[in-house]
Length: 244
Image 1 (cartoon, rainbow, N blue to C red):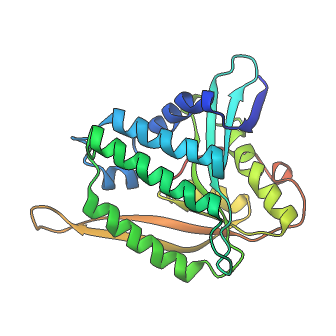
Image 2 (image 1 turned 45 degrees about the horizontal axis):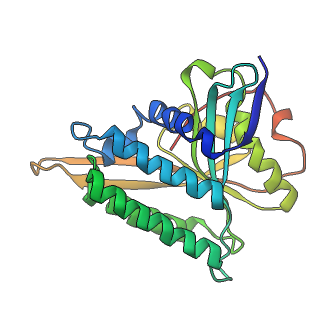
């Protein structure tokens, strides 16, 4: 069956949210930063929806659909480069504030929905430190923030096409790409076939509430340097994946 890759639209958001929720049900990072016993799917639906709408306005959010049925098969959420030697654009700055206000409203309505704020800020601090060390290109990076392929659609090369939608553009522009994956296997090996290389990691550690031992999660940071302009679809065997 033919698969169509296109930019995400407002009408696509409910199916995109469902695909993300399915893929991240067993994700190590999500299960570390959320208390699964208190997880509120309604709040998570609102949260991912806010992210999708911001991505439609400011990012490069792609959706893969079955060309015959229109069923959603995968989603990739890319953030554009932010140069460090130039101030943030007004449109981007205003959109950040819009997202913040929408999240405040969401939290007032639904509460935290199981989000462990202590662990969230542990992650934010560790991520900021990793970016400071790894992000050496002042032009910025195309950031693959979320990548999912539905379970029934894996093995059809859809993940590769969702990645290539932006990596091919990055190659034409001579720009690097970046991602963080909470799963080492099989994602690291697959991403290496797409031109990424392991550049570091983000280790988030928190003591258990009872004070015994530690609970931690590791995210793997990968960089893709710009490559000769040969479509990613032509490089090797097609495979699928999902990652945080």
